[in-house]
Length: 262
Image 1 (cartoon, rainbow, N blue to C red):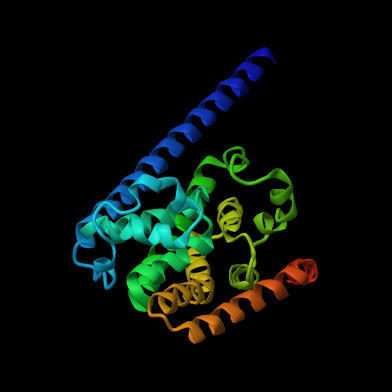
Image 2: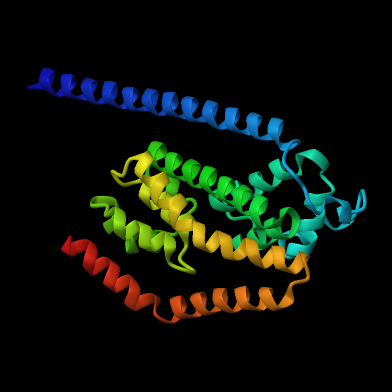
């Protein structure tokens, strides 16, 4: 009996060590991929058009670095003075915005359109948000719930725990599409589920596109002084957020009901 207990204990220790080794191996592989992506990003950054770079005098706004956290105009001017590496730094900001949320998503989205224009700004924002979503998903998948709880409040995890047990692709797509929903939290939550990384990327990237485009267009129209167009995009964005906020509980209840029914 004692021998069986020791054997069982030894097997448990071996299993734990194997899981830890697997975690480390996966982290190393994902880390290498991420570093490779960053190197490519900074290498090709110099070839990305910066249509409004001439508007920023060298050294402007460096004395007010903290202001970039609260103003899209100051963030835009800060980006413009970075020269050929400005697009790469902007993408890094968008990645960090998903992983740790140091910047409001609306601020970086508008700044992208303001500095790089409609097309380039939209592409750069989408690239940054996609990489950031992938990183958050992979970290949650590899390191598990204890790690996720450092970034996501426990009550939020409990609220969306149903997604980790049986993940509906259509439901998750609606959540990414839903205005005002904490999509960054959703990346971590889905990392705890059985959803494959390929499915996650398709759902998250496509679901984020409408919101990303609206924010990019706001910044682009401000820079082009197309104030009437800006007012239209702002009104559409505000309306979507207001409707989403007012009916957030009903929408969530419907989503959970459909998920459980499916």
